[in-house]
Amino acid sequence: MRLSELSGKEIVDVKKAERLGVLGQTDLEINESTGQIQALLIPSSLKWFGFRKQGGEIRVPWQHIKKIGSDMIIIDVQEEEEVE
Picture 1 (cartoon, helix red, strand yellow):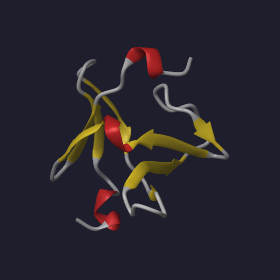
Picture 2 (cartoon, rainbow, N blue to C red):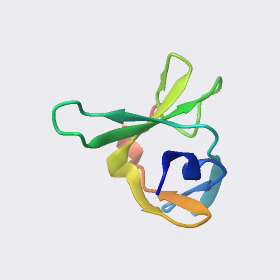
Picture 3 (cartoon, helix red, strand yellow):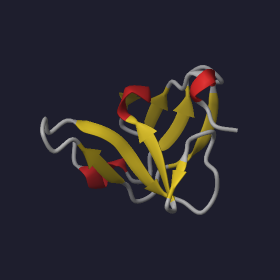
Picture 4 (cartoon, helix red, strand yellow):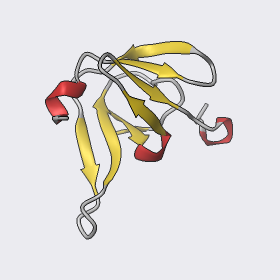
């Protein structure tokens, strides 16, 4: 899968069984020493379903992404990790 293919996919929270939005243009945070993807960085001007905003971006840690399908991304966020 290419990074450009993530755009337009719906994001669904597996625990709350609710649609959280549609993924727009996205960047990846990559660990330079291991080459592993650390997080999705999503441009946004608003707080986005409990994830931290960092300089106009929402950071979704890779471990919260459970499945990337043909039309949606399923995430699982632990409540104690959510930011109010």
